[in-house]
Amino acid sequence: MLIRSSPEPQHIVSPLLGNVCFASSYYRFCFTLESFSKIYADTFPSVDYKILAKKLWGDQYFIPETRTFKTKPPSVNSVRSFVEFILEPIYKIFAQTVGDVDTCLPSLCAELGIYLSKSEAKLNVRPLLRIIFRRFFGDFSGKYSSPSCILKVP
Image (tube, rainbow, N blue to C red; front, side):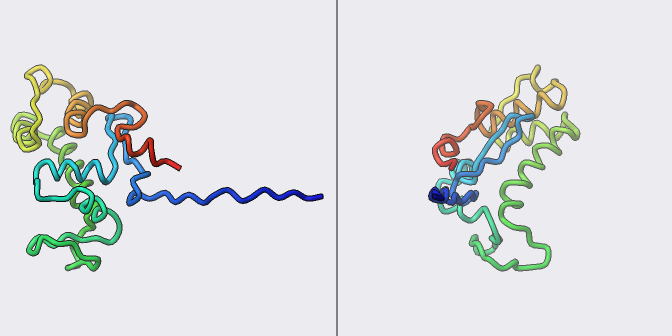
């Protein structure tokens, strides 16, 4: 007699469902699309972070003139919204922290609302980046920084 068990349920993993976290254990940050969009909503209160989170993945392009998103790139040089709103700001933090710290870092920290003590500002690049990312993203527990990841992982 052959007994077949029922197939395991199919789980869909997608950043749009909130069950994918983007993280760096080395620099100790972790975020979801929703948690990153909350950072923008804190700065721009008219932004609905849940709607913005859905626009940060896939073929979505921001049109600055109309402040809308489109699924077709407006030009050949257009970048997807994930690149524009998430990767480029992270790259900017890396570049300006690694670059000319004396001139770039104070303006970057002011722009991000991050305070660094004089002793912190003099740290080597890696520990300094960890501090900046911790203050930008919030504390990193080492496993997940977003409770939504813990609740939604299949």
